[in-house]
Amino acid sequence: MTKKIEAILRDEKLTPVKQALTDIGIVGITVSQVRGRGRGSGIQMQWRTGSYTVDLLPRIMITIVLSDENVEATVEAIKSAAYTGEKGDGVIFISPVDNVIRISSGEEGRDAITYQGDIDTRKQ
Image: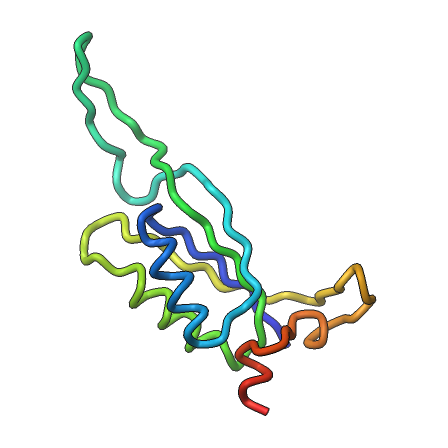
């Protein structure tokens, strides 16, 4: 039915990823500023009083709920737009969603995640 994609990215990759998603027809996204660390242990900083480690780095998290058949194209768009080839490019999580309910209209399921001009309506 539906999936949720959560992509954690470098801050500077937000604009190219949003554009890549728009290009394929992804309309509804949520963007959050987050801090975290992955496989790396952070970065070493030097200051007048000495050095210290910053181990929770600022990142952007994009959340998208979409139809199963759009997951592959969406993941490819995110991967290609967020890629730098360096450590810390980010990570993508894909989870099942049991149901979606639009509060304003009461729509549920696929109807609740369909927007005019989005990837699903382009296919019709």
